[in-house]
Length: 71
Image 1 (cartoon, one colour):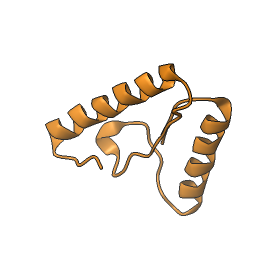
Image 2 (tube, rainbow, N blue to C red):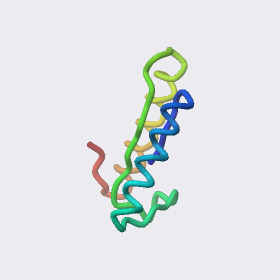
Image 3 (cartoon, rainbow, N blue to C red):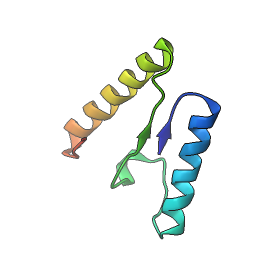
């Protein structure tokens, strides 16, 4: 789970992680090991919108290089 934005948004990301963990998922921050990426973003201010676009583009470039699919 990648979260950006305000504190409440980051706390929501933590809740998502906790929920997946409780359901038996393994959590990692190593891209090479992931099956899914959840991007929890904030679009309230222009800086965070720009940051969100940069992160999405990063994930797009990584997924194209290793065959993973970003939806």
